[in-house]
Image 1 (cartoon, rainbow, N blue to C red):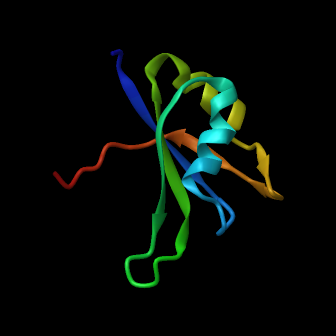
Image 2 (cartoon, rainbow, N blue to C red):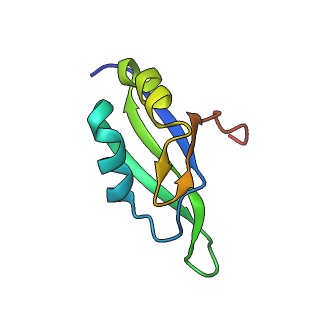
Length: 86
């Protein structure tokens, strides 16, 4: 198993589900997992999510998807910053 990277995906339509993220990114490489971040209180999408991808696919995915249009919205895609809170 090679290295993996996590990509941040922002400006998502509220109705986007994790499986939609997988479908969006799959043409450019293997998606290992995807998740949408939701508000703890309401359970509603906060409009962004993350996809975990293989290291060798990450840059191609960012190039293909950053600025791409999805349901009328321009996506923001970049490599997620590691969390500093551990």
